[in-house]
Image (tube, rainbow, N blue to C red; front, side, top):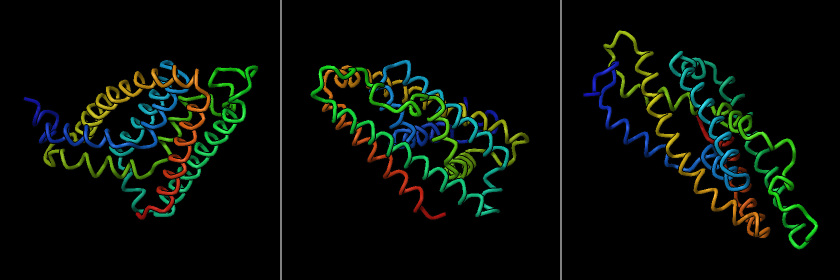
Length: 222
């Protein structure tokens, strides 16, 4: 029986809660899906790798007590929050720029059909971009500490091990979900390569969502 192992309590409640949280749409999962749809499976997994590393770092920081530091120093929290909002806004605007290029060239038979041709060079590193999106989210650290702590036995002698085990479960769940998104994106990729208007419209929608994530993060309280 897993409950009680490594100081974890209510393991199945934690698993169900983790699945529900991961299924909620957010900038990480949306970025992985859009990357796979625009550039294929390999690029999708590079983006997913950035998410895994970023989330892993945040989980380690949570276990190390960085959440308490962010709570104790609100200016530090605000600095990271606004930097994250600015970066999400940059991603959204760059996607809109790429969508405009696709729309402008939609009837040009000489224009390259590859999705990357309409994408600025600065946006062609999915691992790094996904990593930055993950790391510039101070609320994630606060979330991990507040969510994980509910399933850690306060009497357990090594709570860091409990946090690491909970983090591993969350990462495995995320890996399964992102894999499903990546392979769903391969169908979209085939459609986008043949239909430039569809690609431009979809990229516009994703870019607008990233701008929405930016505004939401910047205006969120706490």
